[in-house]
Amino acid sequence: MKIQRTGSAHWEGGLKDGKGAITTASGALASYPYGFASRFEGVAGSNPEELLAAAHAACFTMALTLVLAEAGLTASALDTKAVVTLEQGDGGFFIPTVNLTLRATIPGADDATFQAAAAGAKANCPLSKVLNAEITLDAALV
Image (cartoon, rainbow, N blue to C red):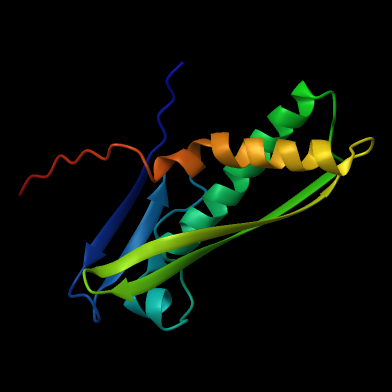
């Protein structure tokens, strides 16, 4: 099975004085604003790292439900927070870490089973793997 999802970004202007809008095909985001100020200065709006964090938390949590189901368990609550760290180094900005924090209520689960399930979900969640993925680019001037 192959599923493709689409997100897009539009930008006008320079880095600091420009502005952008993020859109998802589902309509969850429709021309949602982002820019230098929302990314680096804490101004209202979104940014790529926040979107990656939300996507990773959601993907990991869903992967965990699969691993739990395979162990015969169903969670009554899974709350995951992802923190994406953006740092500036010699070669520019980079993301060195993504920290996942999970708080779970799973009737019948012992800690060893829970820890193994969480580790398996972290290792096999598609977004956990994406940072090692081949990234292709089709760029054209129009």
